[in-house]
Image (cartoon, rainbow, N blue to C red; front, side, top):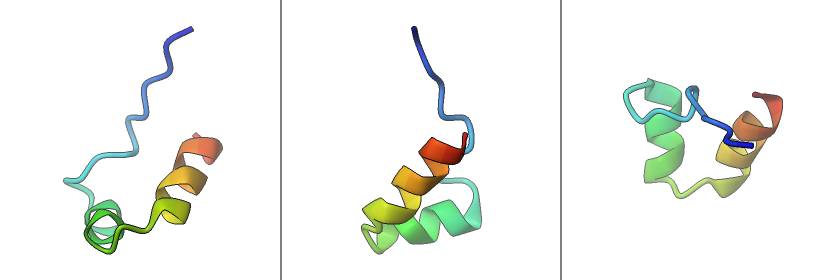
Length: 34
């Protein structure tokens, strides 16, 4: 099965901030909710 994480997109401000901070927990939680 292929899962596309469309909410994990650096054009979204909160996601871009999390990526810049290297906040893996935020990105992981976003992927889990999705």
